[in-house]
Length: 414
Image (cartoon, rainbow, N blue to C red):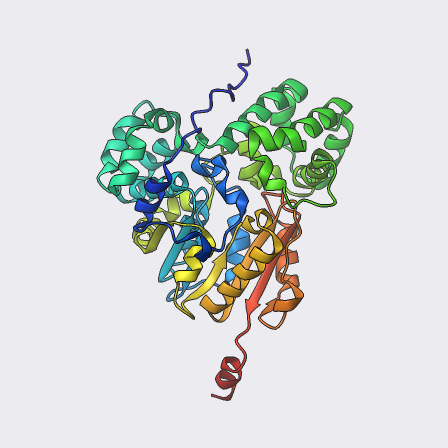
């Protein structure tokens, strides 16, 4: 018997006092006039654990940023998975930045677990494997947490006990969709989707058995603007959306691509959404794989976690200090003038030939014409990676190389 997920009593509705955010960052917020910010960032959703995982394909960041030993990367923290997976490339530093203290505490917990636990225990703690001892496992890694993060998790033990990979607001939204999916399609049909190997078999199965009127109706309602904005994300995320009237129909087209053109058997995002778990322990994010765990444990000390608004963090960074920027899809929450100013600050902070990547979910953001002399778009790289994007919900992927006039010429001459 199915039990409907209770998304009204959301344990991820964790509020974090702004002063706690400031202390976790090691400083108090800048004066208002000094911040590169936007009203959307003041919404309460940014004081809660919104994402327990990064719902972005790490192959896209790794394939676009040219990150290697000796380099420095700046990433948006979110669920922490991108920072942890990029750490496997052994850069000199990874600066993980998020204005939401709960997201910072999540990444710190994942780092502490990697330091203190064996790989099977790590999977138990996070919720990949079933476990009745997550409270005990947390105590084993608690000493590796800074005091604010330890205090946070001490008071939110139910999230630990449930497996933190399920703890975010967005993960609970997807759990509700999974309940609906099983009602509409049935467990057997969902399982069959992950057993089909050929493109032709998936296409036939989708069109003849899966793509019913009920499927399309339920999908379009569940991923409509009102439902996604009130239960999954926040309505303020869509302030700058223009030209997409039917969110559900838009995401339905992208989902068909993921379920037919890409192989669900190799897609751990699809497995998490449709099944509620990974297909197996060989098909998971890079930082969770057993063969990568020794490298992860030796690399997590290179991750520096900062709780701060992105523009304010960039403003305090020195010139020419970062080689790679992974900005998730944060730009679509910002008005165009703030987006442009963040890109200007990015250029100042970037070293010559640095790479920048970011995603567009519903709002088109790309290098403004006024900044064309500062960034060279890399559409071939971006298009190739987007075509194979296992997380599939993003409409566009932007990759650009930072241009530093004069510096490149001197390098060429030398």
